[in-house]
Image: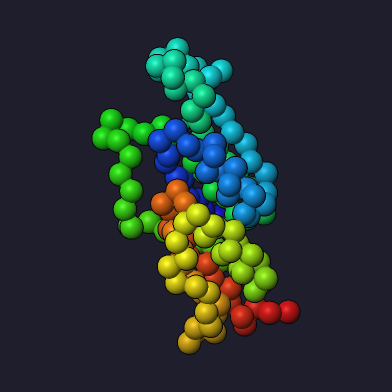
Length: 139
């Protein structure tokens, strides 16, 4: 099946951000620094510790990221959010609390008219998250 994964771009703090997301969401984090890659020779020495590619995987959750910013620089906006469909109310509450630390809890988790627990936040790296738990999926 075709799948869409979120891919975040950072400007030198990818390692910090992905480590934070691992602490918040769990899973296995793989970081590939520029140093040791074929690109290392082509890039300035100060970029060697930057992250070429990273992947955080926990079950079907896949979050990818990099420090590889294009010539236009890093431009953050509100056009993309990371939607986290949680498997329990507890997971939603825990993730919301952890992800919003140092950021902004813009819309706290609340019961919605469509039968879900839903809320959104902006994390300390400026990324927007939507957290959702479908209460009809309770076991």
